Length: 112
Image: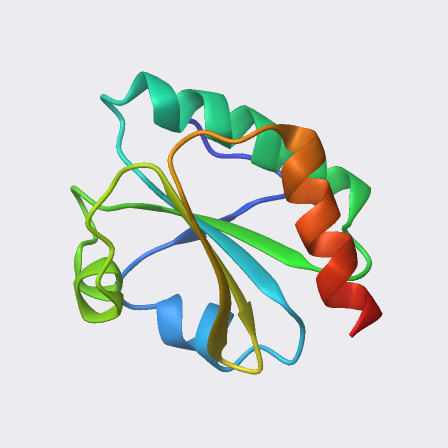
């Protein structure tokens, strides 16, 4: 996992401030460095972060290095995507999904 310009690098220390206290919706990828599926989803998230940069923040957290947020939320599968709005989980996606499906879910959130 390399650092991405449009995707926040999340840690145990900044997770609450960047995600739970955010005034904007946030999509978080829970991933690991050794997971090929995580790499696939990270590439998709990078593209979506560019496309939705005005409406939604995107973050990525390496659960091997920073496991507390995932444990508290019950994340037990890598990769997992959680979409937060007003500090609450509003969508939960486990495994690999298409960019089109993720974009549809993000658009649905923005219509609400």
